[in-house]
Length: 250
View: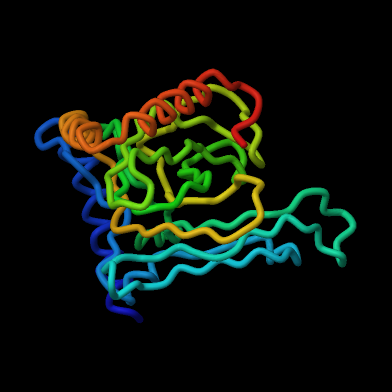
């Protein structure tokens, strides 16, 4: 059994226990969902693409020794699979953390983010349209909460911060409702590419965390200081468009 798996299992059980026993005495400032520290840490995630449906996109999650980070990359292809006439739409790539292992009573384990109001990701990306995807306990296993991954400085390392309350509940890309994420029943988190554009993509990821308000304010202030004004204006415009769109997140 991989050492990284055992350490992640210990962290999950310990974090879940601490969150449930000491939420008011010692509130968490952050919870690390995944931190890429070397090739072995990639085992904490799974990668998927439309190849599962006989599509033609490619997707990989590799360790980049130069950046000292995970590299999510590949090529998006929207061509419909010839062997699947039932498929009407193709072209996606994503990775996410693995489902938390069950506890010793064979019960599902959930991350408890009740005291954490934001998701933060240290990334270095291109200008493709990525989404952050969160799985929690919902009515359907195919429902996920999504939000655009807006970057102040494409091509540079930065910390992107997203308020948890702004994630939208979706089913196959269509917004289902304004139902907020159940923060004490989170299972997985990841990043997907769904921009309906042919071609290569490249996104480096250092870590993904859930953080408190104070930490979020610090990261946001640092990001705005470094942001290009034109990029910042586009960021705000796109963010408002997502908040006002009740029909489709794509």
